[in-house]
Image (tube, rainbow, N blue to C red; front, side, top):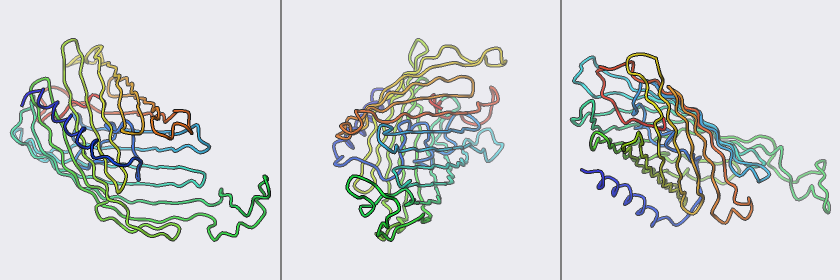
Length: 355
């Protein structure tokens, strides 16, 4: 499998899903820098990175030009666990945890999502330099959804053009309302080193698989199942440059999200291998298109075990008339410990440049 063929695979995936997309919007939270929080959409991604421990903090502020913007905050952490001391055993277990709080609107509609993921990766005959594996993962999550009617205004409280909060609202919805659910998910990823300079990672997952019944204000319905397909590549080129194309596709009920784009990483200098004389430093720049929704740009600085990324969305949908084309800003702070040194027995996985 050569590099051109692998690139065509990613393009076919993105075009095929884009052609079938008939609606926009989203039911659950979504990050523009989706590649920086992989365990939030695929449990099989737990532990699938080059390092011993990975943690991320994501913050997204969307539609700030509106009266009440949408705010999403997340914390993720995952790590691989080698099951044996056998140097020839490349299989490993991955574990992960993520917590997401998504808040929107004047009624503070909030979704709290706490999930644990576990994965098992099977070596398909790869080597330390050129790994090849398939991983399967499971996820269990606790979801709490709530509404705060204390900040609501009702028709009966308006007199002419004036608002009188002392008037009775005539509504039965008062105070806080909340509900709890347990949701289950599963996923798979396949990673293949095409050659020394090119790696491909593709995956798919099914979240909210048990489709629990949800109800806040009397309208009970099943929570939509969510299907995610994603793919990414790392292509090293001469001149200390790495190309990082990505595609993300999500189906959830009538909603669709399709992100296509990529980044270019410029390595300024590498870490010295045996000493701490010099730490690695690199920068990323890229652009993505979210189908029928937004164009967004990404910038990142990677130093030692830390990474700081920022992105900004420019709305391209009809919503741009209400927010003057402004979308959302997103920040990602990442920490990933590297391998302790050369000669480690565990197989090295994809070098996730964007943490």
